[in-house]
Length: 261
Image (tube, rainbow, N blue to C red; front, side, top):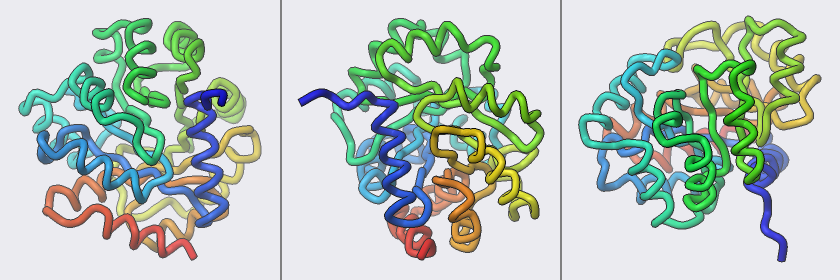
């Protein structure tokens, strides 16, 4: 049987989640936080509920992230979590129930090297990368190395992105398109902009891939409001806060999922 190309597996998982539940669920956790020893067990449990899982690579200057993920990143770095450690842990864990994408700033990827990174991604069952500080114009080398092995480079669009650039970013993306919902950082907003559904509809109108909405999504009401306007929702800071509090992340995610009906 032919092996499914990693970025196609991501696309299929998002579409399946949207079809079955109204909108796919893409939880985010920072690797190795709050307990490095429990990382894989936590990730595996979340992957049982999720359609795709986003794993954050801790970085010292996470410019797109708010205080929650900044705090998680700094603690994970202090605990010795690195991109090489994450890839080794994922390789040992084997393929999880949901595809895994890594959210990383560019420096850790450069430190590994693009070719070695692409090889390691396949070996570690990583289906794609989200790189917030990598402009489209400078993404050709990384995209080429990943694309040669079927691994996605997932581009981001924002409410401030000009229409022509949205089209170019959607055309260049693989797996799905990440639509940032706010003009700000992760976890910073407690409510979504009033015009978010119109913005998401416009992005979906030009994208051949599923569109997932992220930044500021944390409640069942928000998930319900985005259903029909986004194919998936990324839930990051709120889930990290559940983990910090010692709460069951699966219970929280199931509550979001049940809200979609």
